[in-house]
Length: 184
Image (cartoon, rainbow, N blue to C red; front, side, top):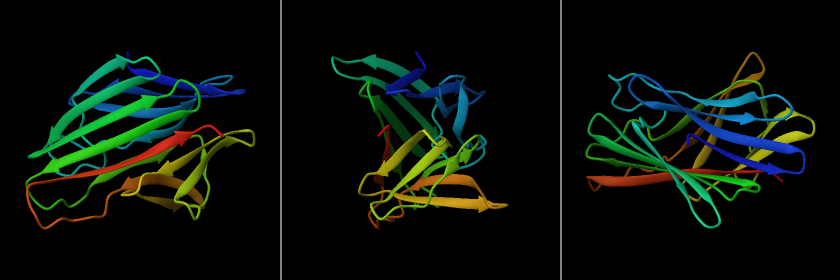
């Protein structure tokens, strides 16, 4: 399985993974009544040491008693990446990323192109809304070590990023970041 879905009231959202030649990309989609892509992960090339999103080469599905989980691992340069996406099967998709590195990172985070959606302003509690229509939206809330950023082009949101801006002195080291997609 390469997809997880959540549905609350009349809003359904999924995350799905697509195999590219050297990694998996993922996209977040509204599913009703027709599938509309909201966010697509920005993937780098095989030459990039610090890609815009983690380079994930393996993907595994696990069904648990109260949740479903997609686990992904991969590498870019000398750094190892992991991602777990957990669905509570109702209203949350929790994205947890990590990177183990030997050299100071130039970039640690996940980048997304905003496709058929709009992104609201970052709220005080480090959350944003992703809107498709007035009654179809989800909220993205961050974990403690994650900062959300948005970039605008021509008055529209072009990019959304979840970043870890820490740079530990001790090497090698591991940094984590993440966010939770919530259907209110």
